[in-house]
Length: 251
Ligand code: PEP
Image 1 (spheres, rainbow, N blue to C red):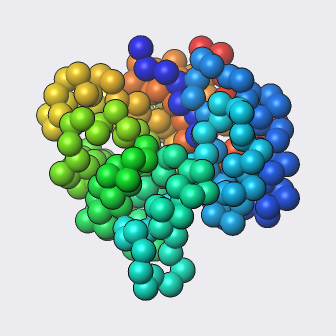
Image 2: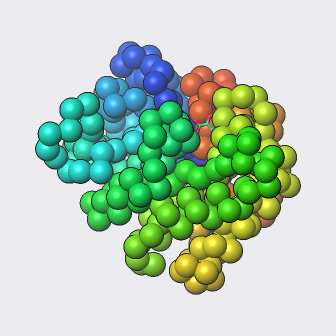
């Protein structure tokens, strides 16, 4: 049985005081939650402060990205060592905004994935097709390429620290979401790809989140699907009144 895993990606929102207030509200409501895993990924500037708020709770601290190098002349980048120092244990990699706005390739995402795993982090690898790709009927080709490309060279023993988030780009922040059946079909396909790469056991154990306009009113139908194990939530993770009902969804 895979444990439901709900993650909040706060993107470039929240000052330090706003972030600590939101984290505090989440700790008060779901900080003792045991039936499901909850992660929040505030902006880098708020990580240290949010870590203090999360202390003693079960909510996990995540980061939205990391540099593919551990240190050096990389102006504007944040290293995995800095993230560990800030209390981060999970890193989101290959988010569509990183791929499509900042030009991250599968090769770069793969370097980040391997370094993060070597440094002992858990990762969430995001994959997903654009609207154009879906309309051209190449969703599986794109998702397979990003999955294989992102995980190339990752040892089977490290797959326990890998989560995949299927996030169709056309559904992110748009209010449009894939139907539960469409999303489940892609999740099932991802499981098949992982089974070919790492075997059936790793594929069955893999947590696959859905992301793309997840809201309190659609989370339940998504989470009912056999291959949907959780959600990576953007916009709705920014307020307790929309994130808490998602975390506390009832199957
Ligand atoms: C995301 O940022 O990963 C995301 C899925 O955003 P939203 O929930 O706003 O679509």
